[in-house]
Amino acid sequence: MAQTFGSKRTVVGAHYGLRDWLSQRVTASLMALFTLALIVQVLMPGEMGYDKWAGIFSHQWMKVLTFVVIVALLVHVWVGVRDILMDYVKSVGARLTLQVATIVWLVGCAGWAIQVLWRL
Amino acid sequence: MANTARKARPGENMRLIDALGYRLPLAGLVSILHRASGLVMFVLLPFIIWMFDTSVTSEISYSQFTSVFRSGTGLLPGWFYKLIALALIWSYLHHLLAGLRHLWMDATHAVTKEFGRQSAVVTLAVSIVLTLALGAKLFFF
Image (tube, rainbow over all chains, first blue to last red; front, side, top):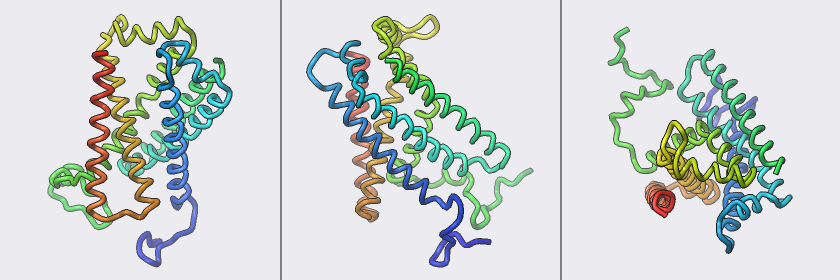
């Protein structure tokens, strides 16, 4: 069996993990920056109401940024939920079923969010 | 099969019932809550998108959005929805702060036991204080 620890560990092969690890951090950074951008706009002077809130998402740059963040969220959540399933669900059949359900759930949610965003 | 006393073999995960016998250090608490908060947000994604949808689509949908939290729907009272929103607020704050803690440790290789404990205290304290503050705004102002 391939060694998974120590100096002689196998560091090549499909899904070794670096790609997932890195993409989770890159997407996390993007979402943190988005959070900051949103908070700054919410705290701008003016009473909070429909006009101000919807106005934030009406700028084209904010739409593009939000779109990118939705895609980043999709990747980020997939890595996280897959980790949870790999840790706790040992049966291959159940794990595959839940992974497929997760993908369906995430792609469906992302589609809905993008639709909301782009009809504004 | 009566195997409750069975010991985990090397390489096998410890069973939850055995793991619960150990006192979790604060860094461990932050870690499991990071996972739990992520799962909460994953499960509540449709509610989050519903909030986004109704709050930005039109002035009419915006007033529907606010009325759900003020006076509830036919089935459930407003405070119930506020409670869900508060759970999401905490989840987001904890997940964000615990994530920033990870990024900081990745970037600076700050992996001492002491830093782990102190940053865990900061993560828990800041996320709880901010949750309480935003919760007060949500429920009382």
